[in-house]
Image (cartoon, rainbow, N blue to C red; front, top):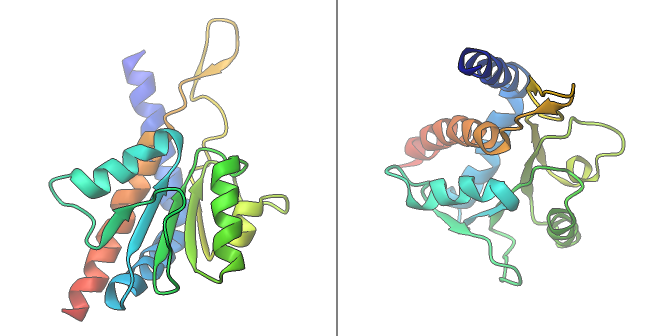
Length: 173
């Protein structure tokens, strides 16, 4: 089973890389605007996507200029927000997205949902990355699909964004 899981996760990450390369670069560029300017990079990870926030703030190589989103915090026009949720229909994520859009504060978003006409999170965001993880990777005992590694997929995107971001902001030093 371990070999199958490894193969499936590898395939998931390859699909994200192939389908999201441009969006990942756009996300890095959007976040770099805050760091290069007078703003902050505010990371709002909902649910298990909080793993990205923890990694960005406490890892060996933290995300320069990043802070954790706290509900009700003051967000300025120079700030850039990276909103991460498992689902594009997450109520807290959509509430934050709508508030940012109303205030014309650019933000990036990541969720499992693919771009579609009915994806409001994608519609509101300046850049949108989909992990495409909309069902389990492995077949379960009763035919259902199990194992949905949303945090692993989000951390992969985070590392890709951070690579591009670090390169962009180092050019400004």
